Each structure stands twice: as structure tokens, then as C-alpha cells.
Image 1 (cartoon, rainbow, N blue to C red):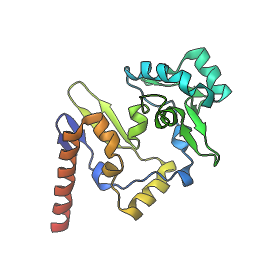
Image 2: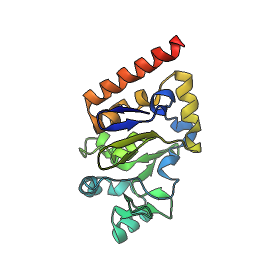
Image 3: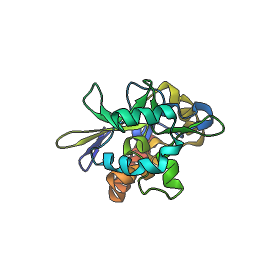
Image 4: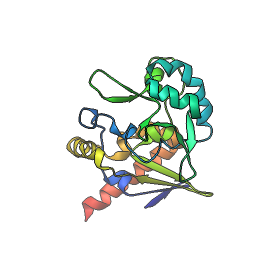
Length: 194
């Protein structure tokens, strides 16, 4: 573990490898799990604003859930999370012709319909961030459904932090990410000198 500004970062973030392999996992991280995607309070209005632009991409079941309880709920851990359908799919899931689960919000963003990319917890996955009063914990989350992503990441030699450069900058800023790169480079040098 090392510290960058007010964030404690797990070594796994620089040592482990990862590249999403949607052809293998089919986007199952948006389907499987105990609850929806963790949300920041300020993301709720963004989801509400995006709703009219993604509505037709959502399943009738997702639309019914949103009509009944909204885009989010409080889970058993007391966190705000996206609403889910039948205890699994995030309400914002949609599927392409190959049966790969995608995010309707990200699709709308890429098509220029909304300015919100998607919840930061989704954008950062497989990194999970826990915010405390005086610091944030930045951890790599292992999940069996992401095994193919670990294999592809090792094959292409892409560490987690490089794969997630864009969302890490979105969350912490350019300067923070540069410091992360410096730590990673120094760590690599130390490993090679042993």
C-alpha cells in the first residue's frame, strides 16, 4: 500500500493486469452482484437527466422498476446504488446484437445525447474506492467473472492503473495520476534491481 495525496492505494493497482474482454465475459459485471452499482449523491441528478435519453434502450422490466422505485435505492450496506431488475441486472443495462451487456448511459454519452459518461464506480471497475473522513482507499477488486480480463491484461502487459487511466484522472485529476505513474515506475525499478 502507498499514499498519493489523500488516497491510500493498494499495490495490486500497479502490480495486477487487466483489460476488459467483453467477448468472453459479455459484460456480466453489470448483471451479477448483490446490489446495483455504488453511486455518489451528486450522480443521482445526472442519472435522472439521462433517463429520457436512454428510456427506449431499457427493458420493460427496468422501466417498471424505475417507475416504482426510481433509478436508485439504499442497499443493505446503507449505500446508494443503481436500481436492479429481478435481483441482478442494473436498470441501465442494454444488450447489443452479440448479447453483450452494455450501459445505456454510456451509449447515450458516446452518441452525444448526454454529457454524463456513467457512474464513476462503473467507469473505475475493477477498482473500488471507499471514501473515509480523511482519505480514500483505492483497491483492486477481484471477481471470478473478470478472469478473462486478467488473462488478456497479462498477455498484453497492461497494469490495472494503465487500463483505468481515464477514470482515475476523472476521479482524482491529472496531477494525481502522474504521481501514480511515478510510483509505479519506481516500484518497477526496485523490483528489477532485486
